Picture 1 (cartoon, helix red, strand yellow):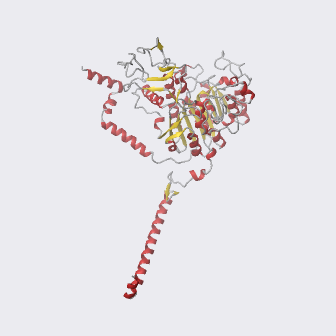
Picture 2 (cartoon, rainbow, N blue to C red):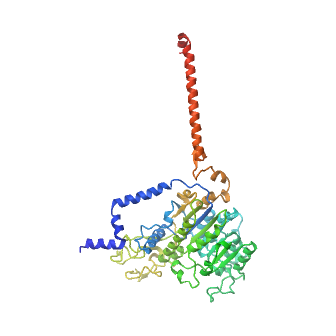
Picture 3 (tube, helix red, strand yellow):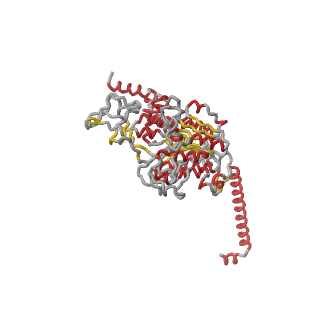
Length: 570
């Protein structure tokens, strides 16, 4: 057998015979391109309805490299080469770009970015729900009425809609915290984290602020139990672990009392069994706290003793609860541990959480309609995460570059993986030399991808991130935008907050079968447009007849006069 034949057989086996043979023909790509073009053409009819509901999906730390790598992983898990796979988010018809810098940082954090896309106002790093006038960690002067900015979730509730959020981090973490909290320090998770200056000047921890605003939320699901109960009590799931509050308050019991006072049928759950038992039909509000801090990584979730619901399951339950409000809702869904996996320099953990995040998006697509629900997928920021090495088609995403059979050697004569980090804990050097990863299992949850700069904690990236959208007014996200633009579009599409004015004129032009026509700049139904055309045609005919009759009359008058007078007139 010749070497060429052997290589060909290897490629066919790794990618699938039919796929490789068809992809090698120009006709395959012509058909595929035409199919994509046909799909794009069908989406030219813009959905300019008012959005009844909005679901904001935030992949924390989900840069473009994370999306690409996660797409390949999702495909390879299902038995394909991966590259040609379509994520649920890939199927969204519109996309744009979001600029993620903060007021004081070129490369921002999750608090400032969440404040930006949820309130429409950029701020400084580590600050939640306040303008850039606030100083990190300084309570006095920061919690000023002029500094406070409000999230679209609170505005939705004030407009009669329901609001809720789901996260795989703790519910008092940066992204969910930006929906309700106003603090100059995102790390004030509980009262034990407050500084003396903060206590003296009346600042509250983020957990307390959630309870103070909990009447505004129909559903809140995530982790963070320890910040809601006194340090004199033990955790439900881990008897040897004490909770964290120093003020003696049991905020979970306070939440129950608040719901009772409102007349709500409320439920608090902390494990998978209790969660599964919740019936949305007889539940008005739901609080789920499934871990003392953050929830497990998706790759580790099955090992949780008490059990945790998946992000997809939490999303489904949240939608079922929220959709009972005829006025609509806004829901925030965060795949928060994508970010944490990257910070650990662990692509395995980050990408498996990306796949779980995409599953949640697919769940929402199946449970909602483009006629009334705007779906937005975006990220708060990126990471210093790369995919390279000229890896072969179908090469395992966690494998060596370009393949394990004949890996490329660096100038130090050692192999390297397709996925790498610019900095982080993967800086594994021995005697000032890079570690040789040949023979090292790089496709396991404990492996840390190599990094160029040694840091105990990998950093965020500063490049733009994507915005993908579908549903009413989704086309407004096309192009490059400030991150704050996202909140502005949500207000416009739903008629809440500062953009609630002129809503009827904006979204209620006459329409017939969902079709709105514009005739001479005036919006009207198709039947009225046809009538207008007939009227216009009739007017043109009448005008033409009148003009012809007038000309004939003038001609006759001129013709009836003597030729001498006609010559004089000439």
